[in-house]
Image (cartoon, rainbow, N blue to C red; front, top):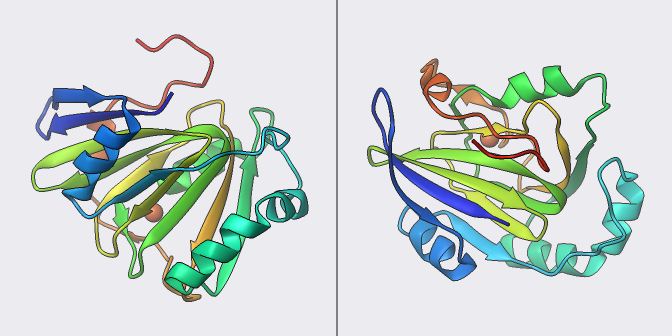
Length: 187
Ligand SMILES: [Fe+2]
């Protein structure tokens, strides 16, 4: 189940509130211009799925999003816990960064955790299958897929160079709890 935890940034960070209701999560994130929606998922698609199968299963919603936002391209990221490149893939997005263009992800299966810093607060959103999230251009954020990543996500791009990460160099991510691998107790 998706979960939003809002922290007052600090050392250590202080948890202010937790939201689980999708409408409440959407309303909270809308305050910082983050677009959050929940869509139906195709249960036949699991972590490690072939990109072609994912694109075919979601052809209709992909077409709708392309129309709405003018995306030029879409690709599929699919990682399962046995992927030998998982730690390398994890580290790449674990440092705070921004993009020149907005970032949109749709979680088809599994889950991942976004951390968005805005206005002295950090919004930690555990995204699960069905979650669509858009982080505005220039908004500082990072992403954790846990030590045992398990997810399939669609990524949408409006321009080829828009999604290059510009790292802030701030080690803020180290102060926040890592994503717990799915299926393991949160603590
Ligand atoms: Fe990013």
